Image 1 (cartoon, rainbow, N blue to C red):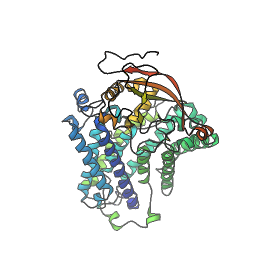
Image 2: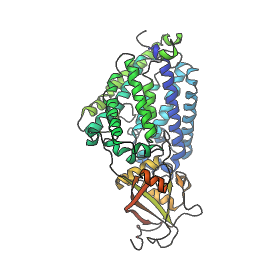
Image 3: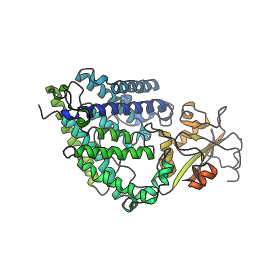
Image 4: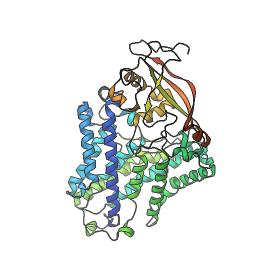
Length: 481
């Protein structure tokens, strides 16, 4: 069946599978290290309470059958071990069916996590990992040549990621059409990286070039993915280059890395590696051919919803149209903030919460708080609390379900919650009161950085949460407020 395999993509498949396994590894480790405080039995949004309210058909998950923290941790560890094994090449050392089972195991485990993760897992890159991970199950191993149908489906995913993001920008904020969005974006993005300050201070003409290049990469280049080689490889290379630029300019969890991973599957590496091995032309088993054809048909049928969304004037970003996250719609930053607000959380051991009392700030790992602390690089690791704090600053509505439980856990000195933070100002005993205030942050100028050593400047806007303590019927107003 010469039509079924594409031997020229032997190396591309290998690179794709190793890279995807690496992304899976990061995702499972992030789940393992953060779940107890976020969705554990005593977490801010506990899984047991969620699964009692949401039926299996809406959120299929192993944890719908049974949940305990030990089981969740075991699944995350099993996923991490399986991902590490596939990244090391174990999938090519076992029979085809076993390799497919390994990839399917990772998909089932991570689907089970995402479907009970609630708002902590409501990010586009979660669905993207699941969609790409599902296709990886059917991509084969060294026992068979790369199936051309699955390779085309991966390009279809990449097209929707890029083209959808390009459309949402052109339909959304006028600054994308005026090429001015990047005058603000590097400063106001959810979690700036160590180079974001420098990107922000690039000359405005460079920002215009950035915007224009982004439009070309997202609205023109994706179409070229479906053209013959070497044009398709050049198009994929352009996507990779753009994503690496985004990696340098900010922290977007594994969104950029999985996009790069999918793009590499479209590259013909034979010019670099020479002809593929003889195994690349080996005939595929009939059961495998039938299964791949059936999956292709399924994906095409399910694609009708994302296509309708893309052509709609009321296009939405990052939505799954089925509970298995098989075919989704993507997009990012249809609107770009012009200012950056941050919620700063403070505690005090004072029995009377005076406005001028001894209030001490909690430090976060990724989100800006301390003015002299240079932003750090965390991606592809995902700091879920830090990201949700960015949304909380946009509107209290985004934090309605979890911010109160978060404050409660600070007041009780919950160790799992404190592990999510960089700095706990109350190492010996929890505070008596916790409050939150909203500040307007901006990057300092070159002169301010030289004179003060501060990367950020901030101005107090208003109270976000009044001083609150345990065992009170309501928040307590501080004296002098």
